Image (cartoon, rainbow, N blue to C red; front, side, top):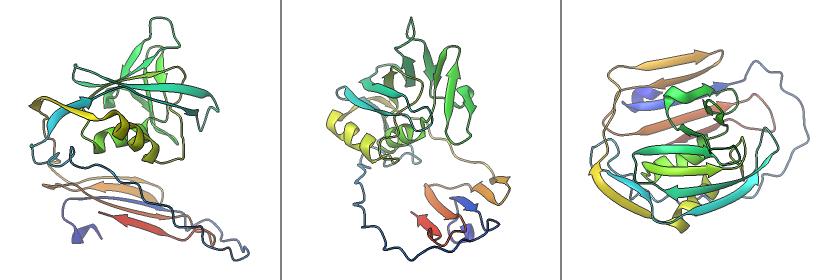
Length: 219
């Protein structure tokens, strides 16, 4: 299917091997309002036209971690230095861990970053929202081991970023593209990336359950 979209990043998760169970017909849930993502600051991310950016003002969110059940208070702060860093302010000295592939310690059910005592899990929704808004410089202070799950999406983080505002910085961010196709398989699931001049995502999910129909999102 990716052949229709050269340069697509295609993710597929299939669970057809699971036995289907019979359930009573359920009424479909009400259609949730789709969050509006401000893409003005992310335009040109692959075209080399996007400037470095940070937040205009601090933003604060409090919530419960999905996997630990621990409450955490998290503050998004403007930062002049390049990069996004998490600081565990509940630990003496507030040790930091950068949001970098070099510090990814595990990805089972969530993305965990770790450097020494600074360990922070379930970072992916927040980092996705920052990336969508073109935020390249940010200090994230958190007083617990896990980023709050909130409603399970990036929408609450988007609202926090909207409230804080975005400030452009001097310089243009570098552009990274694939030089060749990349694919990783894990059982019936896979993720595949193809070289492209622009970002296109296509995601398919099928858990093989009567009460949860297959889902596809592309754009």
